[in-house]
Image 1 (cartoon, each protein chain N blue to C red):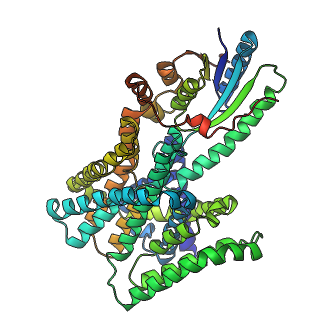
Image 2: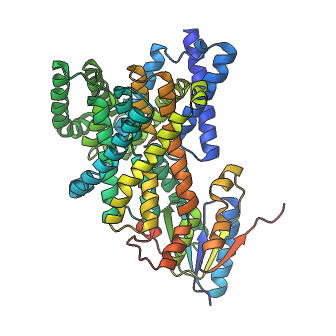
Length: 406
Length: 142
């Protein structure tokens, strides 16, 4: 056990450094963990041997995999079912465009420009198609758009994009055997039963220090995850769907979500993202940077081509439309999950994986920098100068806790 | 004439200095004081963590504003408290325009080099884009 505890201490030390770096630089911890994983593998691997990090140890793979599953569940649980039900037609259209444009565009570029195999190209398309719902949500709050029709449609569309990504990841590479049918059947059954059973079960037995809710959810997630991998699909697919179907019940229990976040961010996801970073080969990336740059550019161009016209069609002012579009180009979590799925299933080589992760990390950084540099806060002035009437309520009023002094 | 004053407030020492200045200003002009805190998502965000951070910041700023309310409890002038989400400078300017603020008061605090490079100083951006007078309250030297 000494060896395991030593490795665990090393990984948690790296996670601590990554978190401090994230706080200092005001960036997502996942981003900093991927970078720290890459750098640590390079330095520790070169100085002391790659065996010390033990990125392929089974206990570490379990923690990392559980992190991906819980993170995906939490992402799905952020859905607002009421809004989604109201806006699903428009949201589905935009969400599918936002998925299909980069998916098909990046897959085509990987296949015909970079010369990747068809499977690797499809995977590149999936990894590049994602959108970070939470990042877009933050933008909507900033503009006070979260309560407008436009904001609600765009947010619901982001869920559709991510749903298309996980469905694509879960089914494109599945062999479609009897096992697949059993998995899909069990999945459908679970998605019908869980929204009915879960709130009743929690009401009867929950809200105790024994954390029954967390155990119940992890039982469902790991169980369906096992079924998914048995059917040669991907465990994050049922996790995201469970999150979505439980969004109206579990997702509204803020205390439970906070406790799950503590477990996920405190223990599990550091292993996932540092491991994902440690599998990146910097020498391969430096030797052939074209793939990374081409994929990053392709993702941004295809997202803009797909999403920006839709934001304009929804009568979003030009600057806000472009800002929203650029922010919809970020997608660290599902991009990394897709890339790691490809590597672990030998769909992509390590060099291709490195290019994909670098492009995913780049897509979390570059569009945001461009958006901040060119659309914040100058849009306020140009909006005023152009006399464009924004349809947004003032953000501070939307979210205000406006109180009068008694 | 100053009718409405906006204070950008985050509970820091410099913001508390600015609170004292804005209070004096509101007393002198018998103006309405708006106190705005801005919960800030990460500059480069990601799923789940960004929403967790926004939720955490909002709770934190609710408490920060409660403390400011306590300090202003005995004042006679009108006041309003609000929490916005986003880039602080942008939200302050936006709030000021929406609420016809005559005078903005902000504190001044240091930033990391990365933050300066990425978004610049909040005070500097408020000065650059505000439609009204802006006072930046600096901490007196020790």
